[in-house]
Amino acid sequence: MIKELNIFLKKENLTMAGLGFSAGLPIMLVFSTLSVWLVKAGIERSTVTLFSWAGFAYSFKFLWSPIVDKFEIPLLKKIGHRKSWLLVTQILIFFSIILASFSNPQDNLKFMAIAIVLIAFFSATQDIVIDAFRIESAPEKKQGPLSSMYLAGYRIAMIVSGAGSLWLASYLGGENYQQNIWRQVYQSMSLFMIIGLTCTLISKEPNTKNNSKINRINQIKFTLSTILSIIIFFVIFFNFPKINNLNYTFIFIINIIKILLSFSASIFTLYVLEKIKFLPKRQSQEIFIKPITNFFIRYKKIAIIILLLIGLYRIADVVMGVMANIFYLEKGYEIKDIATFSKFFGLIATILGGFLGGIVAMRFGTYKSLLIGAITAALTNVLFSFLAITEKNLFFLATIITADNLASGFAGAAFVVYLSSLTSIRFTATQYALFSSLMLFIPKLIAGYSGAIVDVINYPFFFIFTAILGIPVIFIIIYLNKIN
Image: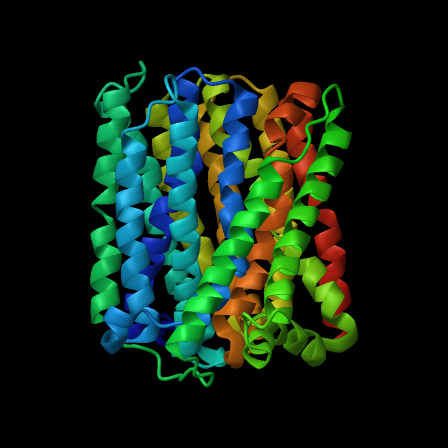
């Protein structure tokens, strides 16, 4: 056990923890901390949960992952392909957080939405690079420690931007809403991006070389084409005809149709550009098509089942997590209570769970660790239904949050190791972006309606509902384990 723990202290693993910190810092500023800010500003619950759709930047990052995977940043070429992308995205995250700090949801909710989407977009792009960097830095057998340290850094950053930001807001008088308090909070959080920048500068560029050399003109063409496809996606998405007076089930179905049509139009745009010979066919196939066909060729008949597992594995965690802070506030807990028990002790438990998940994955295999994570993640959601029907109690709050975060950390580490094992080194960034995008798509889509679901069935049944969502995952893991 001591030998296994010493592995985590190697330089490359510690550096990966720093990069994990850089990845984890923005996530709370887009979701959890933001929800407290919005609730304190008097924004309606159903509107607050809709802000979770900023997380679709993480779900659709595969659209621009080929740019990150294949194209070099000219002025920073000497420091390395992955490192140059890391530096640029980290600087852009810093400035996006500063921009968000000047928004006021009471006066201009759209301006805040734009700033939050920018944070999410640049953060998702950074994730593409870090995931590729991690996978290319070590063989599969060493991915356990790297993944655990990445998640440890990720969770520590979540403590800083979650508990730290709420403690700071409470200290500055955030129980009563003042925009300048939240401006100071977000500006303070932006300074912690220095940790990620430092780790990027001292880290070693992975030795893996990009085999597909693309000349500068074609790089520009592919970049412009990808940007155009993304613009078309969002133009169709935001201008899709609205149908009023529908129940939530039909609204959900319509939104799925809207997303699929927007995605189809985006892909069709690239197809047309290839047909008119704006994009070179061979390289277009290599960048956009082969990462997908490579996966199906390698996994054949079980490819669809694997994709189903990826799409559903974190559904119980994500759907429940969007409502967590809103639930705590409506239950009567103060910001400092949430900071202490949810964002500090809870995230320490998540880090511990992450280490356990990495060790179990190394010792007993990925599928066993996935199964344990799926079962415990679903069961701990049920505990929140108990919290919903009892009187305000800090001991119950601390105990249930700790159990939930242990399970979440364990499942997260096991799942990162699993996704890494599925990825081909030929298409590292693109394939991992596809997997992690799929991982968040369905959960984020449902999570956007979580506020409306609570309005209909109330909190106790909502938490039971999120646990039930995790049951199919358990059977999929058992099936895949049997046939492998």
